[in-house]
Image (cartoon, rainbow, N blue to C red):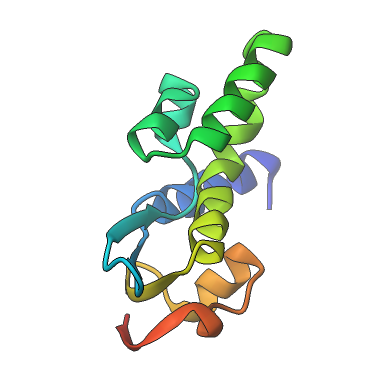
Length: 126
């Protein structure tokens, strides 16, 4: 397989992940959130500001400071990892997956590196 074909396949798979989402619910507060999975187009185009809309002050500060220090180059890293970091933070805050959109639970485990079954409500479906 040629390198250009591999690159096209890589971006094809990346594009499919861009629409995957996990619906989350905090069992204590009842608050619902939607966590996008995969590549973060919003971080690519808007830097740290999408984190503000998600109420994610910690990652806003980290992305803003690292972007300032590296003159924006760090956004080239965060656009690939922010959604995963955000999902892990939400799961650690007590959110549980209620449903998955355009992704299976197995693919989500591979993506996040976490045992999602610990963070899934009984009625979760794909």
